Image (cartoon, rainbow, N blue to C red; front, side, top):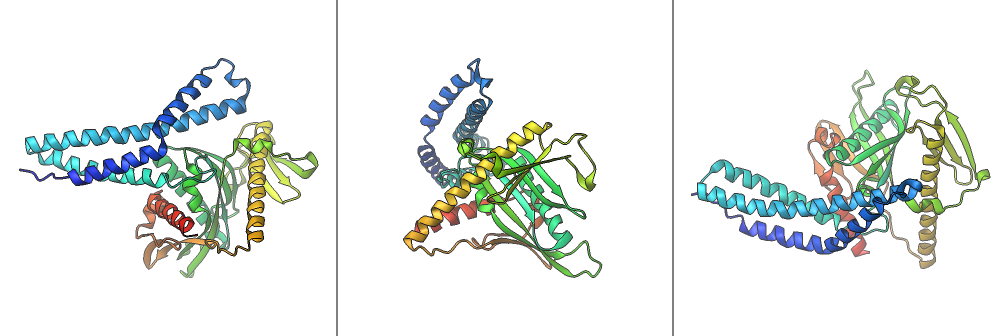
Length: 370
């Protein structure tokens, strides 16, 4: 007779799931879905595209949350049935299937539990991520492109919608910078722990001396804010340049000057946008992102002033957050949490959940200790 005594682990899963459902407030989410579905069905919904986008995005995010939570509940029920059938039939294959499903559910519930730690003002919003190459020449621009693919692969594996908004290609390998959007519930709260400087150490593929090369790339993560339109930007505070969108090697991928670069003169913030087909669409998207950055800058300045008045000298995380070693030892290590992986290829292919979860827990504990 097969030994399938998973009862203690299943009880623990159900208890954790119940806590998650309580914190998430499933009934509230379901009420909001009904309200948003009524708004989405209105015939004049798209008379105001910005409001319509807010309604449809909010509906999609809430539906995804509820589906994920309800799926866990259903899979737990199915697992108990599978275990019972495997025991009755003394079926080793069914027993292995049940064991595998239990491990998968434990991972899924753990991820959901981490999400309950995301309670920041903007944590539930979509994210806009910018990656910039740093010191290290061709290795740095190549590293920036590797990180871009890493995050896009992570989003793809989770079924999250992504849109690359702007890419600046390097003359040699890789990219100087890239900005992309991830539209998913809690995308900002989840990915905000990835912000900072990432360091790559490897034998350079671009040199002939087979020497170790260290290069850097910076990751910036900001929330996508609908209310950013409330920020007033006088026309004389910006400079707008238009140019042709371009791909790798400088080849033109657009025969009109549709790409837009907006420079905010008082702060020096520069926003480029070339994802949309028309100059008008790119300008509108660039202005929206500029407004978001200015709103966040304003809030950062207010928070810094409060700390100054309170005499706070709390240390920040530090700029360099993670190192990737591709010579000798094969290792990726987070310098804040100590979380590491000996499979850098898997990490670069989007296997980031362990690092992200460790970062969220670390941040949560840091806040509690503060």
